[in-house]
Length: 315
Length: 293
Image (tube, rainbow over all chains, first blue to last red):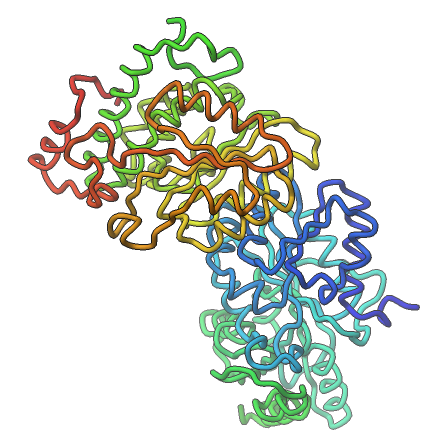
């Protein structure tokens, strides 16, 4: 089975095992959602001493992670993104980011992918709130190869980091050769009419939209941002200089996340019309992804419409 | 002098000179009060309540080395009630971790000694703290790391009683027992006061010893101002096996300063002018010391 045929949570579990084999300092910390994260049963079977389950106690998980990291360990702490970010925001702010300990925080089931669990579990703001935290880096890989590369990078990096983990199978965008560089966006499709900026879960459909529009004669410059912070400003500005129009799309609120990061750069460096697609200022609800895409206007059809409008000068 | 306060691998742990410690405790209370008053405000009460405990820890119990603050086999101390930092700064400065002249910079612009304990800027501090409730979890992480590395050192953690209102303390309490962290010793500075008043009137903790016993901790109680009781109890807590140890240290908030002792106002004093400064300094039970800055 190819890597991209696996659910990404199992890629996470397997990659974590590989990292634990390579370094005795890597530790897996869970808060009673280890099966959902994909680390259980793989990690506890292979590394029972370094599989720490704190129970339903996310605040304790983050600070236990901070204590481990302060002693040279590399803890990967995972939970649903709603619990791994907003529930423990102060713990991450003070014991991880302010104290500057290299805890690796994994927020699973981002945005609409939490569908069956509904509005209580549907976190649209983790990219925004984690990005607003000094010392914190924020990643959202889009496929199995990128996930694996990001995890390898995180295990070796001496700083606090937050990563969204999509749990399901994702179509292959990259391959075995992929290397993650948080300072660089990736141009997945070249075009001169509109810049489309995406991250994480929205990148595969964004690539589909770029290809569809190419057949219509509309050139989409698709920039994928595996790292929302640090944010590669140069690639965006260079693209915006060529296209003059920017559309952003994210599986998140449009307040404070990827679209906001793009706007912050563009308004200071090269102001152009921008359309942000994502969830407006709303909570989630129990629903299918298609329903939520339609309701909030950020599925493939909405991306295509926004790019067409932009290409016509109508953003 | 034999038996006087000194930090380091060759500190005289057993040659305890009671008179020297008594005198130094009075001096620390004088300097802490002076530092905070000169800064214009600060957490006085919760620093004064810890003087005997912190001096005993650094002078007689902790295996630390001021010449090598990051020594891997040292004992650790997490001051979870991070606002007690001034007494920790005294212990470290007088123990040789950094110049005592720094003490006069407490809370000043650009200082290395902020109001809450900061491992980023202060040699010898093991964990950055200040947001209450988090330090016991961090100490658990440190104790786990020691176990994973096969190291023998002890992780001490000082909690506040008001801090014990935080739910996360009890998450960490369950976790430490579940993991049988017998290299973890927690000390609750049970001075019976929190910011808004007496603990029993705000969010009472009693029966506190029974609570921790029911969480499967070994529980000790001590007079946190009695040198012998503090030393014996902390050593006994260190010797516990198969479970974490909780020491309830009965203390007086603001101890040694009549302006604040056992008063809710002692938590964070305001010192707007020279008259206020004099009133706090003159209220000390022992005066006449030189400040080292």
